Structures are given as structure tokens and as C-alpha cells.
Image (cartoon, rainbow, N blue to C red; front, side, top):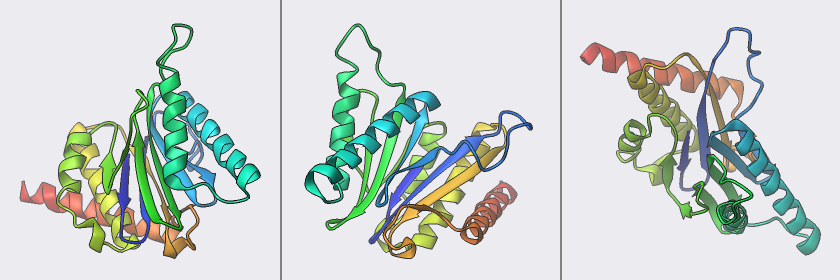
Length: 214
């Protein structure tokens, strides 16, 4: 999974392996909405990801109820990180087997945070977790993310995921991408189908060019 923070928004992208041809397409989403202005995606145990997402939703809802305002991206990530860290303290529970990316846009601008199973939380301009992260990280380091538009960030995320997936020789996968920024009215949404198909075509074309050069 990949997160890219541009000058005015955040893009989340994840590859969902297709383990069986019997699976229904475009369901069992890995990218989840926390609040209207916050989205999250996890890598690792899917059940643990869902449990952490549910906790994040409770934190966002509690903040709205108590303060009559949206929770900031940094505060939400910090609260979720504390929750995950608490599960490393006691013998009666086990740590969560997932790494989470939390993306938000609030009055302070766009935010992108990664929360590790240990409960450590980091703020990033762009980050990656899961399979193929070494390849993906090297590609992200080449990008000038501050100059990317939201659509360009979507295309680059697709390109990097296709490249990392190809080098690992994994099974087929379904691409999920969401964004939050001016193009989505500062609300977290899955990208429109036309933008998704454009990104898939861009990623496959870049992968074909790389293979031809080899």
C-alpha cells in the first residue's frame, strides 16, 4: 500500500490480491472511510485492520459528539496509535498484526500518518508498507510530491504498485485508490472509475516500457 501527500491533498492506493476467481470484484474493500475528511488503509491481517478502523471511527465520532467539530488528522492518528500500543503491554492480548496509513485534510492542510503494530506513529510526505516496499520506496523517493497534482499522484501510485507487484511475481490483483483534497471536495472518496482506469492504463504502460528496455 502507498500513501502520497501532495501540496493540497492525499492519495491512498493498495493492491488487493485476487486469491480466487470466485471472489466478487470491487467488494471486500481495503481502503476504508473513518470520517468524511479521513480515510485509512491497512497492510497485514485483514481482520486486525478492520478492528483498528472501527476504533478510529469511534474516536472520530466521540470527538464530534464532545467538541462539535471534526477531529484533526494528527489527533486521530495519535489516538489510534495509543490504542495499538496498549495491545503490546499485557499478556492477555496480542499486538495488532497490521500497519495502518491514515490520511486526512483539515484546517491545517493535508496529513499522512503511518502507525506501526508497536504503536509508533510517523508523519510522512509519502510512505509505503507491505510487500514490495523496498522497490516502492525507491520509486517514491524519486518523486517531487509537492509539485504533483492529485491526478498525477494517482497515476504515480498505480505505476509504483504495478512495478513492485511485477518484481515480486505475485498473483493478479485489484487496484484500489482513494483521494482526499480539492478534487473530491476535501472529502475522502474512492477515485472516479474514469480516473482509476486511466491510472491502471498508465501503470501498465510504464511497466511494459520497463520490460522492453530490459
